[in-house]
Amino acid sequence: MAPKKAKQQPFNIMIVGQAGRLQYEALLFMASLRAMTPDFAGRVIVAEPQPGPKWDKDPRMSADIREVLLGLGAEIAPFESAHFGQS
Image (cartoon, rainbow, N blue to C red):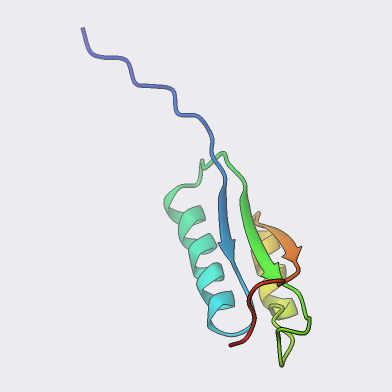
């Protein structure tokens, strides 16, 4: 008798996306996940830092990248940077 496959429990993934290189890495991650694991049942949350005193420039992702991420099923969660920033 063949062993039964263990039922896999859904899990969530959180990544950081911000202006510059990390927004493209977040996009590449989402596109790869959807292409290679189309039945992924968990949530993908892209944490996005918001402007504040720790940043010289706006750290938010560009509107076109945000739109594609949302279209791929990601959720974008803004957060305030209290302990880190640009430097």
